[in-house]
Length: 229
Image (cartoon, rainbow, N blue to C red; front, side, top):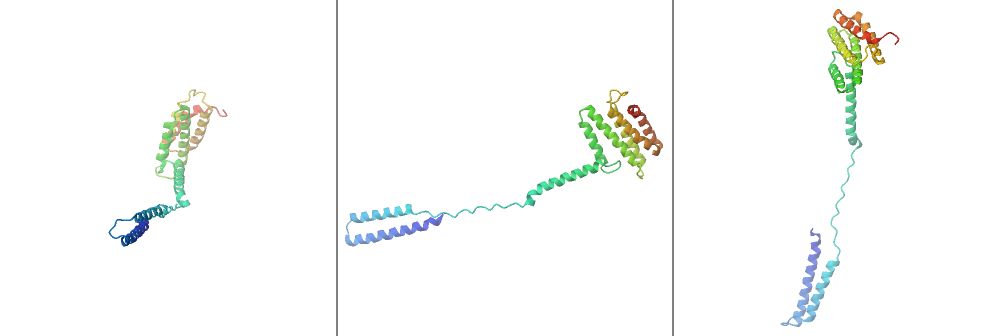
């Protein structure tokens, strides 16, 4: 704020010098007397002129504020959240795919079963729930068939659990069929598909699991209907 003080100080010094000069002239011409009218008039004119010069003099502009530079954000930085989101979605889809294909005894299989159970719980329509239950029963039949190809020590136990889950889920789905003697086409198709898969497994099963499979075939046989219908 001190940039304008120096010119004002210079003007004040100049006025003081001018007054001193006028005072000396006046004192030299009229020693002992009061100031003459010419002296007063000259002093007044000098003060007015100095005042007008101060008002007319343009002020020096202050330092211009430097406009802040807008830093451009690199494209990679701007895209980083989207890239992270895409990676997360991709990872989620990969985990979902692996979970969906998991079989009994595998690490992600409980997660698959939990997802199926949640989906069934959230289904409000009985018809839609029956469709989902038949889909789950198909998955259990396919899993049991795959277990027969595995050479694991606990294979028989896993097959037994899978067949029991298939049986219980199928019973829940068929309970909703209003006319068991004349089931809908989708129910007949389901029963025939299941019968075909399970019948192929029976000769390869041990005695305990063969009994479970045979009871299951008896359950769905009435819903399959005559061949060709």
